[in-house]
Amino acid sequence: MKNHILLLTVVLIAISCKNQERPALEPAIPIAKIPEDADYWTLEHLAESLKDGSYLDIYQELDMNETSMQFEEGSVRRKVMFMGEGTSNELFISFENEAPFEIFVLKRGPWRTRDGLKVGSSIEQLNEINGVPVQFAGFEWDHSGYVILGGGFIDADRYSISLSPSYVDIPEDAVNEFIGDQIYDSKDPDVEKLQLYVDRIVYKF
Image (cartoon, rainbow, N blue to C red; front, side, top):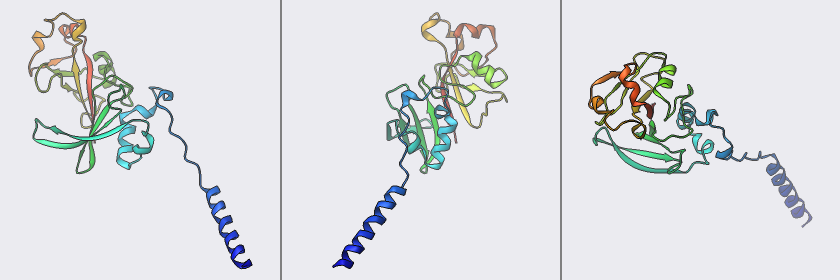
């Protein structure tokens, strides 16, 4: 009987020591405390965490919901995951063969590139970051406002960017001469009246 008691005591001590050695998990930083200029909000940081799977821990404060969507004019259906859906933190990621394929940012919020480009950035800010003036396609068609980076600093193989006029701040007919698939130079004097801004950023893996 004494031997059984002694064995039980040894086991309990071993379990207690093992529990004491296990490091406590650090709680996630509440979103409200993460400044908008933190690397946390960069598309590059998110992309890295998606590739190695660490996003589940790093971005656990953001709601994540999976669904599917059609792409490439309806010819392809891919799984997508929304993060922060319904908030200014919202974006979504498309997957191909279970691997992350593209990240889409369509709302003004904290998400940005490491160079500081975000939805809502002006055409002037885009040109400054790119280092050379961009060109863009006309509006109100399937590829409305698509940006041609023209060999600038922004990697065209990694990022796809679209522009939009500030419709609420300009005359109703200001966009009329920029409708359709024609390509325009962002330094054209007539472009200034459109008050262009970035309205979509896509990060491509």
